[in-house]
Image 1 (tube, helix red, strand yellow):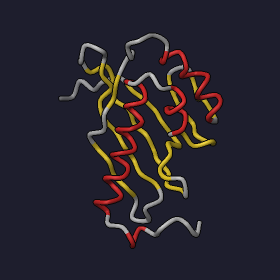
Image 2 (cartoon, one colour):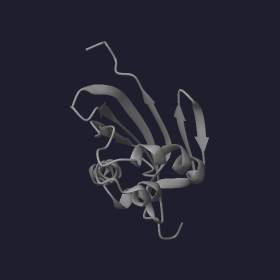
Image 3 (tube, helix red, strand yellow):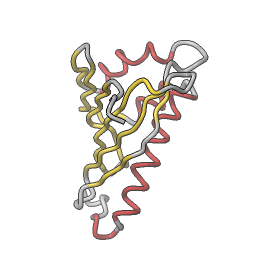
Image 4 (cartoon, helix red, strand yellow):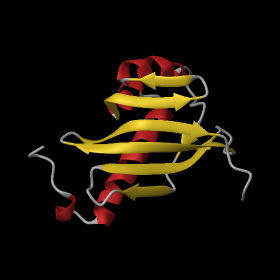
Length: 134
């Protein structure tokens, strides 16, 4: 962990921007139909949870998500509207809308990111239906 700069060396705003940029780049992999880049944003020990259960580890997540990269048009997109980082600078939450190709909101994503020597990687991800509470 010697290569990992402490959060005290970076402002909360800088760390938040790093996670926001990582999430935007992660989402761009879907738009670009770039599966290999998608997988590169996921930690080796990550867990993605859906209605079908949990996918554990990057290999299982890749197998489960590969179908979303079939075809020329992404089946959905997402973007962060909330990013929060622990004061330690080691974990972060990103959350925001999941959108259908036509632009309507079809869900909400919640991702937990972990900072390591190789940058920010997703360690947990869970989507849920959109809230009717607005």
